[in-house]
Image (cartoon, rainbow, N blue to C red; front, side, top):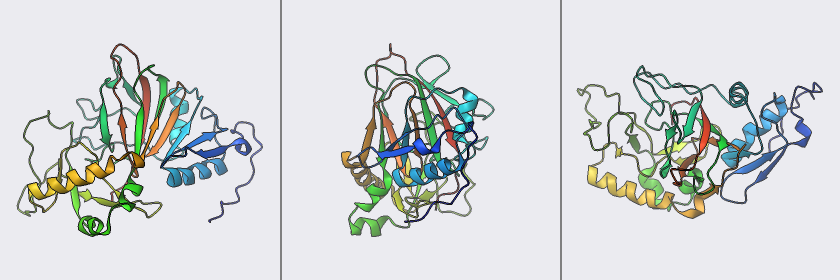
Length: 300
């Protein structure tokens, strides 16, 4: 086990008190509850280091009972990385007509919010971009009495539990996840082709189907369950059959942690090592949250 750096103790009361911080696993296949941190206040360096290690170990961290302004939320989030800024020509959730996306995205079924109240299938945020986000933080302001739960799936465990024949089959494959915001559902999309004479496509960013985590070195099944995808170099029927089999495996409950939200919860998740989903909730109930996504690198 590695030893944490010997940071100098901080006595300045502007910092959250690191001695009271505890990290308690959920008991499921991923996730841990973090207590003893007031995210609205600056956090001391040793605690930040512990949290950075904890997100590698547990994939999601849950902070409860928080009250933050937007500026405080941004300050807390950016301890862990820079804000994700998508390329102007590649739309993501909340992109405006000029291709700009706010640093804090309202995930809400009220005016000005995004994602509505329907079910969201297991997905990896920004997987269709050249440099997908590395992590996100979601802060709950209002939650419905029924539904609206979020489930995270452990992509490292999903890969680890594949049979050896399947691992050999998929290691080295490249997968394109097509941008769901580029065209309306059902409209034709240009397909990627291994043809050097073909014009470049702003919709085709092949990433490894088996991704290596940049911090832990673990292999991950880097796949969402319902987005339009293409296995590079494979006939469509063969690729579709493989993806269907992998998706059935990924959705197994043994890889999942389901979170029932409370007002004041912040969940910080590793977008490289997890997929996440949401249950539907009644349209007349309010679910108001704020999301910050952090920048990532090219998957390898």
